[in-house]
Image (cartoon, rainbow, N blue to C red; front, side, top):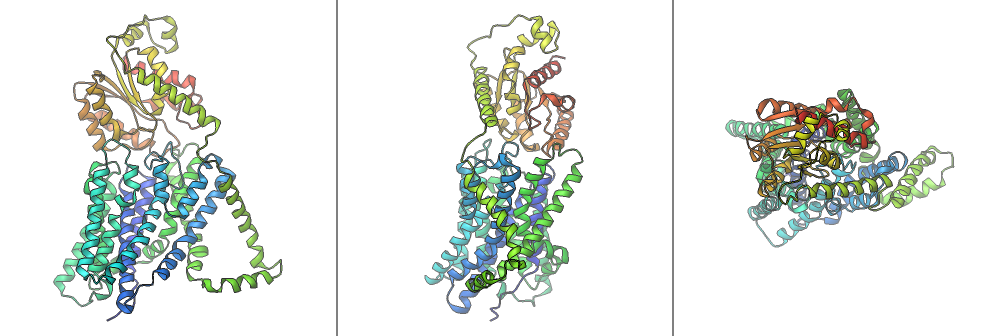
Length: 610
């Protein structure tokens, strides 16, 4: 029996497809809406490889050296992660101190591989990119992977020592993956931020457990290169089907889709397992199809690419005032920076640390100490020491759950506005109609006739924090308004909000929707919202002005298309109005100053009252 571990170059091709999906999801969230599914593809490969390697070790020695396995994993994963955390902590300390809050918690939870639960515990939404511009958001997946690296080998050793047969071990891992997928479906609540389900270990482990089951059922060193032509064709067709299904999911399966959590992600993981199985088989052609210089290059650097892609996007886009101006140029710059940083990480950190003989560390350190002060091996340590010192200073002085004056003021305003918005829902009978006054009409550039109409109108408004900030002004113009807005709100929660308002008889015949600041729309969520509203109500859609976020154009184009599709929708072009009034906006270029709140309400009122 050949027990030598075979390096399957096609896996680098699968890694390339997976990491490109993740990057393009973050760069083009409305086009590559399912690119995040590259992560479960990674998980399937990881589950397969570690169990396949350990299984071969057991076959050779009737023993698995867990300590050696964990040390290899640490050598492979830790150096690049430490490099990322040190560089990012230094950058934040020097140049982006608004991200210092909770830096210590991020670093230690990442190093100890419980960052996914740290994010959940701190209520950090994976899906709110506007209010949560966190360069470390993506590290949740490393924690899920590492926690499974800890558990899967121990279970494998236990099963082997208990004398479990191959089919039974594969079946146990498969049942575990099914249990994980079922748990995801149980935990998911439509209309609620799914971060806890998306980041949770047990609800996301099914991909790795599928890979583990495949490694027992489909051992790479037992697969024969000489198979029949019919079997070869069947494998290749299965591989193409799986690959096309994965790529199709990258373009179609939104992270807010209910189907995703009710089995959709599990199905994608099954296709990933099929692709891994076909690529691993020496009798199929897929290993050759997925092996080429570009895929080999990107695949070998996929870990570093994954690590650096999100911090570079966050840091770069924070430094650019209007990312939507020359978006393609900014995108190319970000991709170039990601490739440069991942290449440096690969050559200077990952490969040297993976090959280094750590048993020689004490001897090498003594030799280094004896070197002259001007030796290059000592001189190069000076800038490294400075970077480490800056990082450590930032990490250990970073405030935990503390907010600066601007954040505190924003939260006070939000709380006050939430209270005012909630008060609009407490309607005991008819609201007394205000008399039109020249003062209010002049303030909002309305005629007396328009203002009188507004003050007699029953209207419901649903929005995010931009609309929430205008509640007092809205009440001046529309005293009968029911305003339901919240910080971080996105379209996926609109259906639930509308149904709650309908149940309380607070959904008027005229509805204004102001969502899109915090993320992209999906057609499924939009259709669900419109179905809940019904075709007899008049709907006004406010498009978005959020120049610091790359989804601005996608959201506005989508809203324009929906306004053409539905007869009861009118588009309010807030973007066109806002770009002519930069003085209306706070530093984030999206939320409104006092004069901007007046301008926003005036513009909405003028459009509704036409």
